[in-house]
Image (cartoon, rainbow, N blue to C red; front, side, top):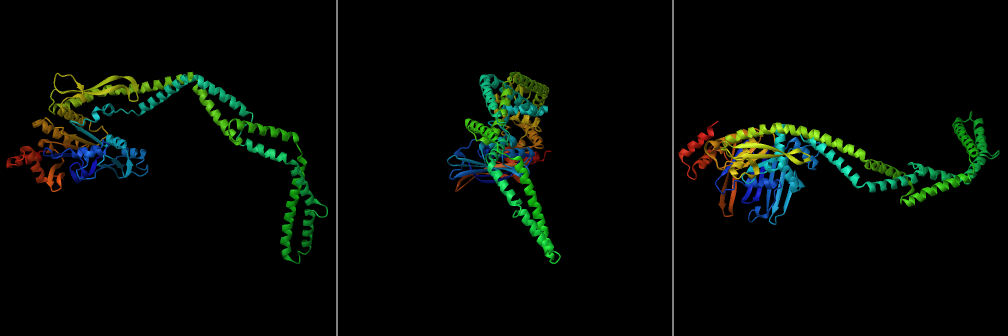
Length: 552
């Protein structure tokens, strides 16, 4: 993942800039005051830095910054989780946009969707790492320092974090249970009483509907029996019953079926009707044989329905809702039984702690093995950067309390000169030393970090000669694995770059503006010569510049 494209509009002293960027090592040079750090400032803003109205170019209404990165699978997962991409189709690139108006109001977008500054900052940690005299970012953040060591050691904290979360939940459940024993027991007793009351109803999901059906049938038993008797009479009356009349009609048509063929079909229909009517008569006879008035049964149903209604009013529910309420109470009672079982909770907490400690000790062992190796590698890289005799140390200190990231704190210490005591990296006084240490760390761990674009702002401050050339070679080496951009004033560093951008100021009737121009061939030779000899570019400095650019 690397930075592909940048667009600036009315940003500080840039009127308009549309810049394509390439992989490898890119040097940014220019005269003092030309605004070489403008691109870095713009990138910081588009990645969530605090916005102020002062970044809007004088006379303009708003500044606009766009940055486009190519997309990695990990970044696609993040975009999906945050709602900026679908799980099935990954966008071709990551497009960030931010505007700041003259009132200081800021707006941001990620791939065309509105975003927050917090989301931009979260992306910034994944796509870009800026090192400079006054922008010592990731290596002063404890989580980033620990992440570099863990990456170097091949340690993943996924399992440890999961164990930590389980332990914390178990500890919280145990503490909550201890603090709320009386309250939980009162609730448990209340639920048991309520369940006992509702259990009298045998409250299945269909019970209320069945009870209503039975009650309706018994309360209308006389009317049902009268209807059945009337239907029997209508069907089976000796002279005028439906069965007798259907049989007569069938016989009448049957006699003439030999003459009229269509009668045969009607005879079949009447035969079917006669059979169905006879079935109904048989069923009615059976129904009347098993049906009788049951005043006592009706009274029992009345009493049971009254109990349903009474409990429904007591618990402020509809009668048909009581079975679901009963199941809710049973579930809650099971939870309370577990919550009041301190022995089980203590055992779960102990087991979770043991699992965490086992995983954490494995992480500690891996870190302890990797720390001296990383210290030695970075110390060696420092020797060629004008810090001969300097020493880098990865310090592990026991944490006051276990954390989701392990049992120890990780700190980077550095001694810039022989005989000095290593101190925390963030407290190194010299900005030049700070920048060169950043380069040493970046080169040593170039395959490990997540950010694929590294920016160094004046990392060559305070060095020159052979050290300057070493800085350039190291950046060139680093550019083989990642995209590297460096603001530099040293020709030895710029000459090692794969790509060269020059920042210059131009004045006209509209005022002064900065421009960024890609250099090729003769233009690059002339810029290197300017860096070697100042304003006056001589044949000697031009020849020296060509020689530097031709070195392998």
